[in-house]
Image 1 (cartoon, one colour):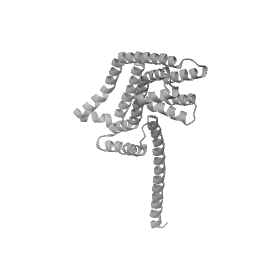
Image 2 (cartoon, one colour; image 1 turned 90 degrees about the vertical axis):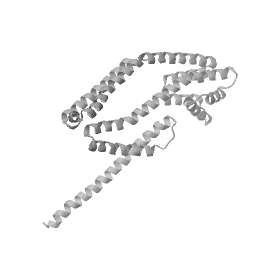
Image 3 (tube, helix red, strand yellow; image 1 turned 45 degrees about the vertical axis):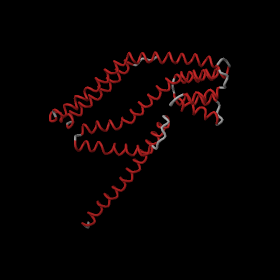
Image 4 (cartoon, helix red, strand yellow; image 1 turned 120 degrees about the horizontal axis):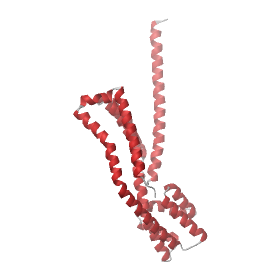
Length: 281
């Protein structure tokens, strides 16, 4: 066999394989970014945050690909794994916290809006006019959600269907009660102002009770956070104070096993404490 040919064929295969790998990696990366972008766009639109998520997704993808490599190179593989986990879980945790705060604001604003609607109906205005007045007087985010209902109704959708869409979008027990009460009152008749007034008092009492429960269980939640953060704090402190003694934890198979056990114990402890301090009404 010609010696030059024996060197040329492997080079051709390596070059072709590199091009094929680069093409497949590009296709996979673009599909990943596209799917994540659509998910982020849906979450942002759900929170009425109308920004282009493409740039943020690309920045997050670059950080996800580069940050663990740099940490691995200059610090160690153990911390690189923790950075990778933090970058993967950070956006989901941020979205979850933002959604929880928004839902809490909706629940707190709902009784006031119901009282405004009841007062408008008692004054002789129609439900449509009362909703317009309540939207102007109510701050976000409830005013934004109710504005969508009014806009859908003006575009030809029945009020009951618009309210059902609102309940499906928010998935809150309090909103389900309001939608059911308004739908029943419009179907079978009745004093809608009195119904909304009574429902507002009920929801306000429920929110007050939930606030008392949160206050009573806040100590347990704080203890859970402190106990959960204490091992991470000690690990970081000892890594600076006793660097040589802590390095086997991040550079050996036994250290990785210990970190895995610590991570599993942290998650189980967090879920256990959360279940203990969570009280449903």
